[in-house]
Length: 128
Image (cartoon, rainbow, N blue to C red; front, top):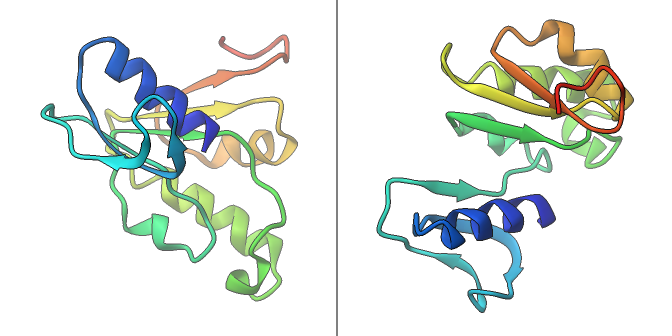
């Protein structure tokens, strides 16, 4: 929610008037969803029911992967990790995966991601 709110706020402050759908209320807009006038859609998606696999974003941000919503994945953490890889493979070949290198599970799946990536974090080998 924090990351999605930040991205939506930056786009709005830049005059891009994005459509956004966020899991929590964006204080600056006074709502959790808004129809913008631009071609940009900022959507918060998570792994809770694996429905994020239906999305086909141009850019995806993965902040962390942890053992949450495990009932959806039959208690199998490897299934959850594979689902994140599958989600990132929904990006087109020219898309971009922005991932947090400080998260050990994100770091673990990164070699399986066959899309352009930018890593961020405090790790010395992060891109940003």
